[in-house]
Image (cartoon, rainbow, N blue to C red; front, side):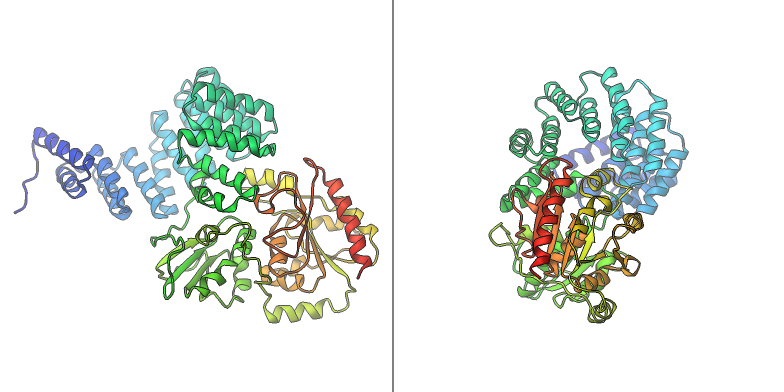
Length: 567
């Protein structure tokens, strides 16, 4: 028998109370039934819609939650709250275009309060629609210039965009308005750290710890300052303090992973490395509904491997696909488009798609950089058999003919990383890991070498600047993807590269590769060693101190002279 709908205010109130009680005790079915009874009578009841949306979201029923908010908007088309909630639901569903449209409509309704503008801004940040986020945070400040949270939230975005001086100014305003506000000092420290003001940043983070000694965030950010100074022992202790307060704090776990991995404690570091996706600002990304594979028996089952982070990461960790094939898995790989032709040469992959193509049905999924955890990889058993990649035969034959008249020895050069202007932290990293080609002019002291450029993007133009001093062969315009680059690398005798994807490519091809490595090394290159357990053919030449490329290049030039004389 159909239960009568609550019609009076008293009956609606009682029904709402019953729904809340059911939700609190975990009886989802009863709670949903009561909430839907209320909405059948009062479809614009936002408290009910909000509670039901939470209930549906907890069950991953995002389509049902979106339908709920759409129903509210039919009854109340001017509801800014419903429009924002619909947008956030679309973000969870991966519908970036729809989410942006909802947020734009919410902003067009011109909210009168700063809290609503901050919610709109946070949605735009998740979508990486940063100009719209800037406008929304500006509106929040205009609504209420006395609210310090408007300054701290805006400062966080400005730091993410690389506007560090602006972020510092906003954070300083927050500290003046609210000297005991934790996030004012955290954002001030972040802005100072990004501008190289290490001592000032440490002072700001220490102030954050003084204000909130039971909150892990101050400790976590102080540890990042210590990591950037390569004081890993101090960073480990500080992160342990943060995790004693909150063992599941994502940023603390992620940064402890980086410390442990850099120290070579791989098995200890991989579990913390799983917190990487919770620790960074991310846009709409593909989220499979299948369970993550963590090492379970997989013979006869289907798994989807997912690329993540940079091209170098995919080149490094695709090696695990062969190990999965040995366990009897059917393997699909979703990869960045520039790698697709190269990875098509891998016999262990059954289906290869790029990020624009439909995903096949599988039983499991695993991100490429979660595979070391699933295989319990330690420093003593890294799967380092190379080559595990090869160039397509047609490309290999074409480049063999193309370089037939180029004398040996042939040495490939990469002197700069990719310019990721949309990621401020990556821009800072690129500046530390990259060179100007002119800094490598000492290599010309070694005679009888044919130097070949493997450099792409803007930095390739630097070849013209040194043309009178250094005749470098430049084929960069013909390197349409990594299959072509691999075919060219196979025709070389040595690759000299900064920390970028070509170094991983050369290592995966088992080509001798010399890595010019920055002082504050990436975790995969470890510490105080000139080899690399991931790539047997790789040799490192490290900066002895921050920014000291001159010493590293001098050491490499001397080694190159010996190498050339022995050929």
